[in-house]
Length: 170
Image 1 (tube, one colour):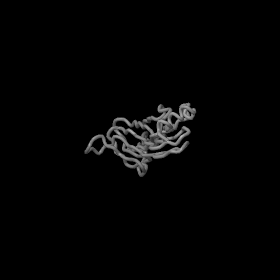
Image 2: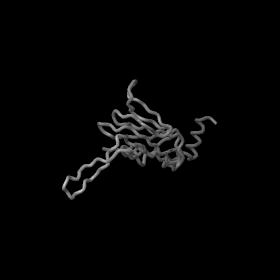
Image 3: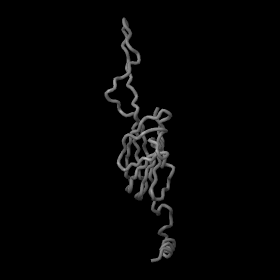
Image 4: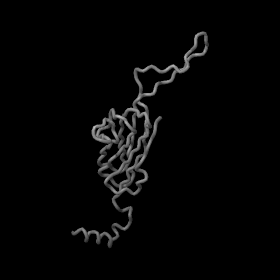
């Protein structure tokens, strides 16, 4: 059957009468977290040392790591599968990626720089209700540590407002 005839048949028979009957997959980012990587083999800093001839004890606070771990979950929440799902993550200025989930690719801002501008993760085919979680560790930026992420697929998305999320850590 020719494509034009098929479209006319659908329109006349009411098979494609409403927008909800079209193939649509709504990928979203329901959660995104940033946390300092756990510090090992580093003693805590004594912030209020106990003074000689004093009865008060000193207090300790853990030292902040120079690495940040980011975890992002992508969810397909509509009634159709999402094909060619991709997650793009914009990183803070002048950071290096230390590790990341499989399927990730680093992209630099310009040729010859060691700093990563953004990451992309090929999540591929996502079934209805499926979650895909990626994580990566990067060096802490001296400017700001805000990360932004955008998820999309090759499927039409009825609600693109939930495709972006950002998180910060200080």
